[in-house]
Image 1 (cartoon, one colour):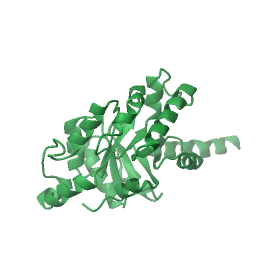
Image 2: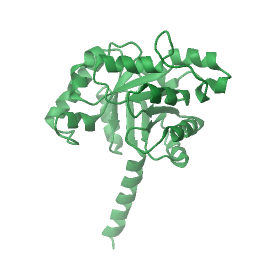
Image 3: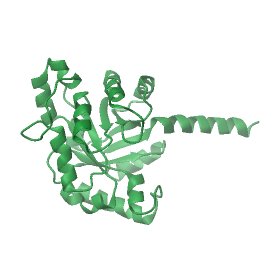
Length: 256
């Protein structure tokens, strides 16, 4: 595999903007690639996308000159191994709430002696043709992002960020609000206070600070950049599609 441009940008602290993929369609990938995203994150946690489909989508994303991240369904050794063997440039792992959770992400993703990932031959390893090249790549270029989306994770964040091998964090505002007892109310002061704490702690580390901006509003992206975020997921496939449909249909109906 080639060097990971996303990894290079994160190491420098540069801003990288991608988006989220929940519709299992190569046509959607091709359409989203026209927007200039640097990466797409395939969502295996909150979508019906299977591991087989994920493998195909990784290939489609990379063929369209973007890097493929996968939000795995859980911090699970088998699913992480399968996703990485399918050739993903990196993973996003949900509900990483403790140091032990973060250490598992690294152990499940890296070959020995760093981790405990099983060695197999699949798309990532060129189906056996370039295993040693991939072995070097996964050690140096694989992107590992943990999702901070529970108040327990916020309280343990200083130690989570010390785990070697973790490249950065991404805030999950919906689940964070739920962990505080206010599902979906991520503009409440309690949730905003937790996010502010995440920002302060992460900025003192050498890790990337990420956020998933759900709304398809470019001004919110500029706001996050100005707040110091450098790994930003801009909305997602069905939000872009749905908002355009509803917005244009409302304009039509208003003139009838």
